[in-house]
Structure formats: structure tokens, C-alpha cells
Length: 357
Figure 1 (spheres, helix red, strand yellow):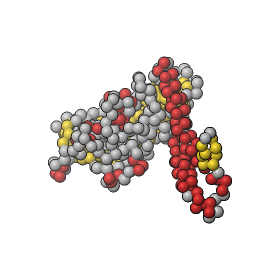
Figure 2 (cartoon, rainbow, N blue to C red; figure 1 turned 135 degrees about the horizontal axis):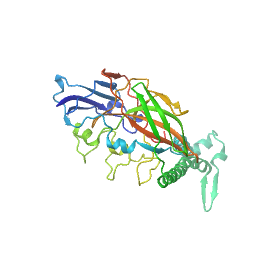
Figure 3 (cartoon, rainbow, N blue to C red; figure 1 turned 60 degrees about the vertical axis):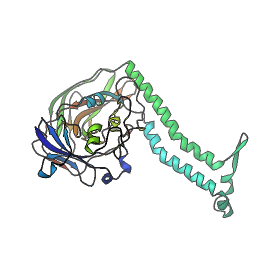
């Protein structure tokens, strides 16, 4: 039996508005029949951190977990990060950028409307701005009529974009694409050589890259490690568990509730690729001909290693374009061997978990 220590402070969905120090650091003593990888630490004590190291004398009091350690891709990653995916409609990104200006304009309009008598008496704002507009039996302030549509436009754009996404997903389900033929001749943590690329006739690959990330920790193990029950109060940054089946990796962690936009269809496998919140990648390489060399991330990462709390996952991503103009992605998990040396990266590369970003 092999023993090692795992220390994790994984970023929640809305990590931009959270101080990492306020999120509890999960520390466990892992017992497994498989030897752990060489020591690794990505991140810092005062921020988000992923650490896997040897056991020391002071670690005996840590909560113990007994879980599988493997280099084979975990089943939930094969279900959610393997195959063809549809690129979300660009209207989603536009709508998200318009939310803050829309709310700001509406709030300012309400404030000015509340201060209308004082502003008019001080002659700070022209009177016509507060002129009411008669619509039916009621009068409406002109400023509110201008501000409210600006506030509503992002919502309407979201609705239109979701309708377009659902239509494209249903079209794919009715006529799915076959998997391309991709042969990898040589790969390591620094580069990867693809010797054969053959995509279906009605779709063309445009560019590709290698990316690596840390998957969301298993919810049950995370709660046990911090002494909380499954049906009790969730950990900071985590919402309650969804009662239905998991359709995305965020639902497993319990931090994606209410944020699953764009909208996936309710049947078949997930066709919208959710980004890993901890992710690094190499540069994009244009796909010209039947071979391409992909460079790895600028930092040297560990190879594939999977456990309940720490799961380091490698994959290649191809961007492609169908004949009808639909943008697609094809994702294939890959196995990268770890070097015999330990890995230290000072900053954990954190990104948004939103699909449209």
C-alpha cells in the first residue's frame, strides 16, 4: 500500500469574485495500491493550489482516503471530453459583455428618475429628459423607456443564441459525424507529432493544439475531507448537488448550477465542450496537409495521473468547419508519460468555466 499527501484548493465556478484564502484547503492522506507520481505542486499557498507529495511525519492526523490511482482516462472524462463538439453561438459572448452596461444604464436611469425634482430645480439636466411618454392610459418616463430596452437586449440575445445552439445540436444528433483518423507518432510533455490526419469529407480541420488541465475533484471525497455530509451544508464555493444525472463536469462539483449556458439538449451525450477551470495549453498550429507538430504548454506539466481529488488530463483539440459553416471541435484524450523529476509551477492557470468563453 502506497501513501501520499494531496492538497487541493480548486477554484469554484465564479472564482473571479472569490478570495482564494477564504476557500478551505483540502488535505488528505491518500492510500492506494498504485504508486503516486513524482511530487508536483502547481500554485501557491495564498492562492489556488494543486499539490501531490510524499508523506511526512506530521501528516498522520490528516483524513485518510482510499481510492484508485490510475493513468487511464477516467470514465466521466471520456463521456464529456471525447469526440465532436459544437462551438456555441457567438451571440452568447456578445450578450455577456452587454450585461454590465445594460444594468448600469438601468440603475442610473432609476437614480436620475428618483432625483428628478432636485435635478430640475438645480437646472443640472434639461427638462425634456424627464418628459413622460404616453402609452395607452399610462405615462412612462422617457429615460426609463430608453434604459429598459438596453437592459433587455442581452436577455433576448441569449434566447436567440440558445435557439440556434439547440437547432445545431439536434441537426448533429440526426446526422452525426464519423470520427477522424488521427495517428500520433511521437509525443511528450513538450511536443506532439501527428503523422496522419483524415477528417470526414464534409468537414475541414483548420487548426489544432495540445492542452492539459486538472479536472474537478470528486464531490463526495471533497466533502468527506472537510468533514461535511452529502446532504448538509456545502463547502464554500459549492452549491447543492443536482438530483438528476450529471450532464457536465460542473454539476459533479456542484458549482455550475444556473450557469449551464449555452443550453445543452437533454438527450444523447453532451455536445457543448465545457472548459476545465484549471487548464494550460500550447499554441495553435494550422492544419495543412496530413501531418502537424503541436507544441506543449510553456510550463512543463506532469503526465496523466487520475485520482478522486487530483486528475491531470491531457488532450488534443482540433477546430474544424463544416460545409454549412458550423464551427466544430474534435477532442481526443491522450496519454503523456510523466518525467522522473518533480514539477513545480508557481501559478495555477485558472480560467472561466463558462462554455461560451
